[in-house]
Image (cartoon, rainbow, N blue to C red; front, side, top):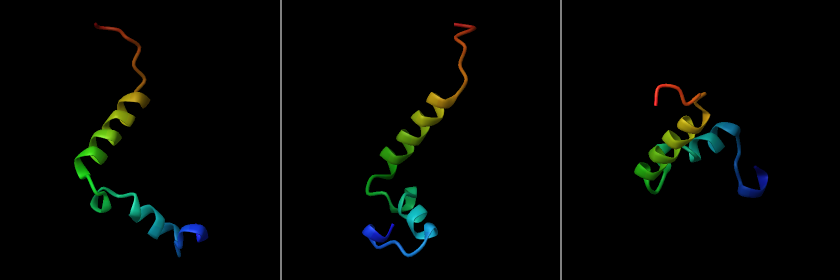
Length: 46
């Protein structure tokens, strides 16, 4: 954190928010894909 001049964990977390993203749509898609990867899918019903 000190290497990148963050004064607090809250400041660090805020810099990774969608609001501060240069491309909010890409941020949203990436997070959606991460949710899908973590979902316990067993392949049933296809």
